[in-house]
Image 1: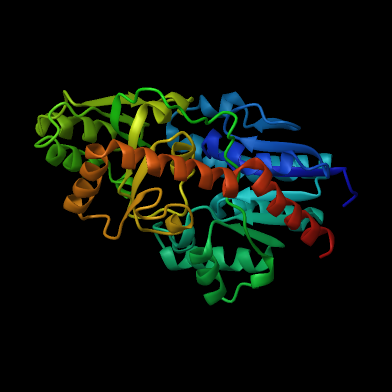
Image 2: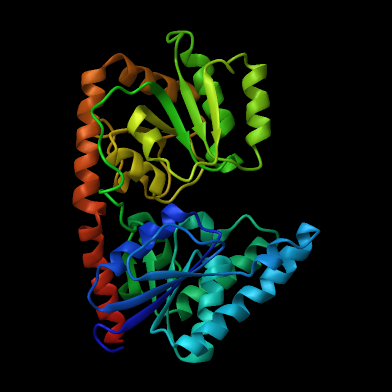
Length: 370
């Protein structure tokens, strides 16, 4: 790699655009980086030094949907190999192990390029919930052994991967950067009491959120909750809100490209997830002054400090515990504001572009000297 002329490929696929920005920004600000090329489902947010390469539109228009899936499985790695041969990147960074990490490793080894894999889903990402789980777990461990460097989100990930005999020297705790110029603190009125931003899937617990809201209404009759996102459980969750007779208190906003206004208008972000690593959504909310009440999973405690800048619930199924902690914050606005200020300061100090770029520079140095 030649200093100040490094070309980085980021293989993102259908990864959310906020997460892509989070991963790209720490590298984009480095003088060593000449260009970042992002392989993505669709063009996303503008990022310095970056451009997008997407799959052709005609593929996405094919019917039925399983044909699209089959073609993508073949096309995406071939597309990556083609552009690797043509543009000769210095590093290929696959975000998530399957399939993007595996595709990145294959392309890197076929073309003599270095491979960086970003583990973003903690232990569940490696062990998977796919059919033939043990087979895919072995593939994941194999690719992590074979790649040149790995980014993780915290000590829980580090301990787990070391237990799998992964070389600790190539593990880097790089969460990715939160754009604190975009996600800004608001001291204005916050009309949203409870906010959820995420994918409507079982793992995230949208049904648990509705149960929390139902119980809160016994004390907070005018509670206003907003749920942002889409997913396979969206329709089911909306129907459940009607069945619980809480539909007047819950607004479903669907997918929103710009989540900043929601974080700035909300008092509390609730995330009763069964599994997380370190949610970008949580960090974005915190820097905007929205206090998280979140289950204690993955690397959450790297940023969410119970009774300092958040409420961390040990059992993600403990609806009553979520209700009690949310009620405490809703009843004590000075305390909630104290938590909000502490949360913003923590994100600026630990997850700003400047802070995360130091770690990105360490990765570049490691790969240059490898």
